[in-house]
Length: 103
Image (tube, rainbow, N blue to C red; front, side, top):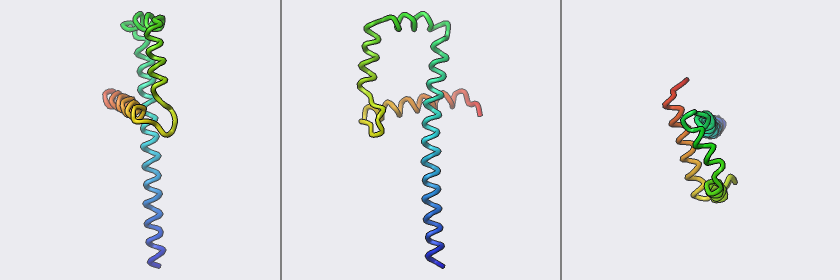
């Protein structure tokens, strides 16, 4: 009986840990989506639209962006630079979510 209780308790901890990991993963994904949607929305802001269009035409800027993308990785096992960029992006989405505070 004691072994069964210990097994149930251990199994409960494993299930709770898995649920927490899934929640954290979904929260990270939500923060990235918030960041992307808000960035897309702000890129259509009248204050920025002319400058954004000029940058889209700027060959030097586009090459710089391409080099930046090549320096990062979307692979599951990321290098330190890609991990840091992921943290920055997720934090930015979290900050936007906290500022707007819509629940």
